[in-house]
Every structure is written in structure tokens, then in C-alpha cells.
Amino acid sequence: MMRVLNIVTLIFFLSSNSVYAKILKPNKKIKPVEVVKIQLDGLKKNDISYKDRGIEQTWEFAHPDNKIFTGPLDRFKQMIKGESYKMLLNHKEHKISEIYSDDNKVVFEVVVMDVNKKYFMFRWQVEKYLESGLLKNCWLTTVVSAPVPMGSSI
Image (tube, rainbow, N blue to C red; front, top):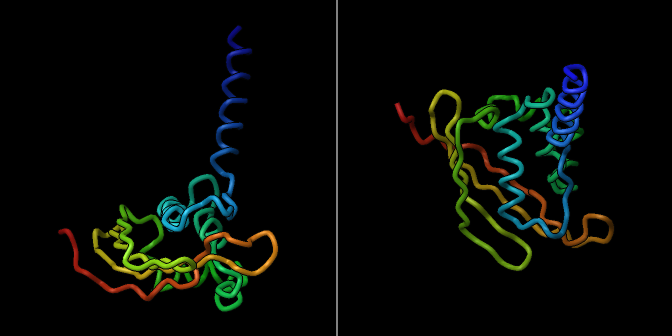
């Protein structure tokens, strides 16, 4: 009986872990604020499930034009780990506020508290992909500004 219980527990763990590890793909039903939330949640838990999973999740919702500028994926990973964006990795909390929207573009102000309890503000812009193909009408990130330091909570 104990062996069966151990096998069932192992199967549950493996199946729930693989579901957690699944990278979400753009979908026209995902709203603009949800795109930003998916990306920030991924970066907040960057290495959970496997190394750089959060960066890969963020990359998945990058606009193709943005990927040309920041990619390929290995180069994007290095950019996120660099001085300009490293505060996004494993950050403690974030707040998302919409500051502009029209039919095809939404801009958010994102405030992040990093692991050192320092606050940074970003402008995070998503746009509806209007070209044909699988991404048509999906909201994708086109711009993330350089961070603006805002002090600390200490």
C-alpha cells in the first residue's frame, strides 16, 4: 500500500510540476494587463521550475519587431541579467497601473520592488499585433523603458 501511495504522490508531483513549468503562449483572449502580469510574474519567479523560465516566458510575449532588436533568446537573457533590467529578476513585488490606451496600444506604469527593497518605475507598452499569422490580434510587448530609481523602503 505504501508503494502505491508513493507512486501516486510521484505521479502527482511530476504532473503538477510540468503544468507549472508550461510556458504560456500569446492568445488573442489575453488582455493587455494580463500580458504584463504574465511577464512580471515570470520574472519574479525566474528560476522556478528551471533556470531562466521567467525570462523565456517574458520573451514569449515580446512583439516580433522587439525580438529583432533584443534577440535572439540568449542575447535577450543577457540583456535582462544586465545592469539595466536585473532588478526585475526575482523581485519582491510589483504594481501595474494603466496610463494610456487606444484600440491598438496600451501603456502601463510598472513599479517594482527589487530584492534589495529598492523601487524602480518602468513604462511598459503592449500593442495588438495586426499582421496575419498565429499572433494576429494578440497583445505583445513592444517597449519597456529604462528603469527610473524611486528610492527604497528601508
